[in-house]
Image (cartoon, rainbow, N blue to C red; front, side):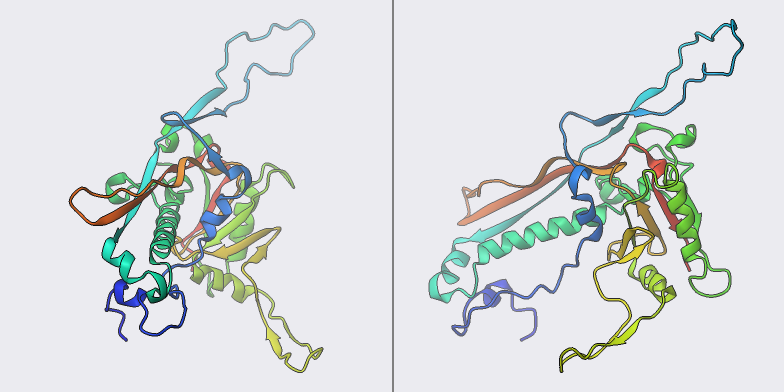
Amino acid sequence: MAPNRGQLVASAWEDYVKTDPADQVFNYFWLLENLRVGDSFRKGAGDPITGTIEYATNTTVKSMSELETLDVTRIDVFDRYEYPWKFVGGDIVMSEFEKQVTSGAAGKFDLEAAKIENLKNSMMSQINTDLFSDGTGTASKQAGGLQLLVATTPTTGSPGGISRVTYSFWRNQTTSGAKSSTAFDNLKGTMRSIYNLCSSGVGMQTPDFAVSSRTVFEGYESLSVTIERLNRSAVTDKLLSGYKGDHIMFKDIPFAYDAACAPTDSCYILNRRNLFIRYMLWMKAFPPVNPANQFADVVKILSIFNLVSDNPRRLGVVTAIT
C-alpha cells in the first residue's frame, strides 16, 4: 500500500494483528542528547537569559620594589551576557471520529498517544536542528545555535550581547581542515589543535565531546587503523571488521555525527561547562482543549529555551574540511 492513504487508514485495523507504526522519520539527536546531560541542561527564569562573566585580569598587579606605590585605578573585570528566550511549539488534533474508529478491538495502536509521541519527537528534531543554526532562520525566531556561538568567522557578531569585533575574549576557536593533497589528511591535526586551544591548560578543563556531519565522521573513521578479527567461541560468530558502536573516541572524548550538523564540512569540539541549554519550559504538554465549533481535542506542547555560552573561547570548530 502506497504511503498516501492517510493516518486514519494506517491506524485502524484491517486484520486483528497488533502492531505499532514503524519510525520512518527521525534520526538520533546526538547534539541535543549530549547537552541534556547534567549541568549543561539548566532551568532558568527571568528575561533575558543572563549570567556573570569574568573577562579580564587585574592590571594593577606588577613586579615592584619595596616601597613602590600601587596603581589604585579601579579595574573592571566582571560583566554579564544576555541571550533572548526562544520558543518551539506544536500541537495535535484528535477528532471524535478518530477516537471512535480506532477504539477497542478496531485500533491497531493508541492513535492519540502515538500522535503525542510523534509531536514530541518532531519538537526534538526541530530543537536539535536549531542547535546547529546561526539564529537567523524563520525570521530570526530560531535559537542561536552552534553557527552563532561557535562561528566559522568569530570576529563578527555579538552573541549574548557582547561584541566579538571589540572583545577578543568572546571569540571561539576555529581553523581550516582543508586537505593538503589527499582527502582528510589535515583532519586529525586540526582537531588536535582545536582541542588544545579549547583547553585551559594541559589536562585542565578539556573538551567533553565532538560532533560533525556523517561525511566528516566517516572521513575521520577512514583514517583509523582497520581492526579485523575472527572469534570462534560460538558457531554463529563471523568476521568482525572495523568500527562498531555509537561513537568513536578522539583523544579522551566521544566523537559522533549528527544528521542536522551544519555546515556539513565542519567538526565542533565542545564542552558542557561553557555550552548549555537554558530552559524555562521543556516539552510542556497543556491539557486538551475542545474548540467550541469542532468535535475534536487539541493538545499543545511548548518549549521555551536557548543555547547559551558563557565562555566561547573554550569552544571550537574545524571548518572547510575536505
